[in-house]
Length: 161
Length: 103
Image 1 (spheres, each protein chain N blue to C red):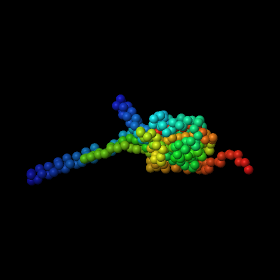
Image 2 (tube, helix red, strand yellow; image 1 turned 90 degrees about the vertical axis):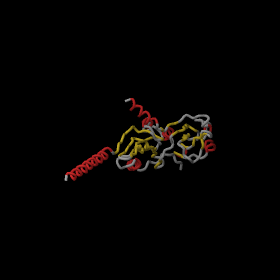
Image 3 (cartoon, rainbow over the protein chains, first blue to last red; image 1 turned 135 degrees about the vertical axis):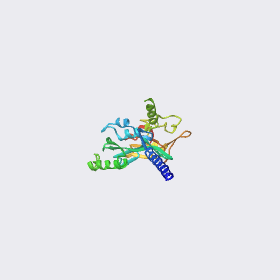
C-alpha cells in the first residue's frame, strides 16, 4: 500500500514537472517583432526629393530627369508611378528545438498625376494598409482622380482650315 | 544609446536611393557626345539606337543602358537599374539630360 502511494507520488511529480516544462516551453516560445526605420531596397524615392517638387510648376520632364524611368504609366502618362520595397522591421520566431527570423518587407509606391500642360498636379505615397496592398490603393486613387476629372480637355491648338 | 544610433546608421546605410549620377569619362564614353543646347535628337538616335521609352511625343526619351566596368555603357533591351533621360526642345535640340542610378 505504501509502495503504491510512493509510486503514485513519483508519477504525480513527473506529471507536474512535465506540465511545468510544457507550459514553460509554450510561454517562452513565440514571435518577436522589432520595428525599425524603413531601410534597404533599391530604387527608393526619398520624401525629400518629392517634397522639392512644386505642384503646378514642376514638369514631367523635371520629374523624369530627377527620378528616371517610372515603373508604371497610365492614361497616356497622366499618371506615372515608382515602386520599391523596403525593410520596416524584423521578426523572430522560436521555441523548443528551433526558430527562424527574417525581415519584414513593405512594398511602397509613389504615384504622380500630371495636368494637361505636363505639370505635376498631385502625388501620393502608398503602402500596405490592413488587407489592401499598395497597388490596389493606388488603382483606387487613380479611379478617384479620373472620376473627379474623367477626361482631360483637348489642348488648344491653332487649326488652319 | 550609442549602440542604438550605430544600429540605425547601419540599417539606413544600405538603402539605394534614386539619384542622378555624375558622368565619368571612362565609363560613360559613349554618351560624352551629349551636349545640352547642341546635340540633336537625330544624332542621339543614330548613335544610341531607338529609345526604350518615349514621352510627350518625343519631347522626352529614355534609354535603359547597362553599366559594364570594361565596356562602359551598353545600350540594349535589358534593364540594369540605369536610366538615361533626355529632354529635347521643340526644334529637336537636347535641352537637358541626366543619368539616374536606381531605375
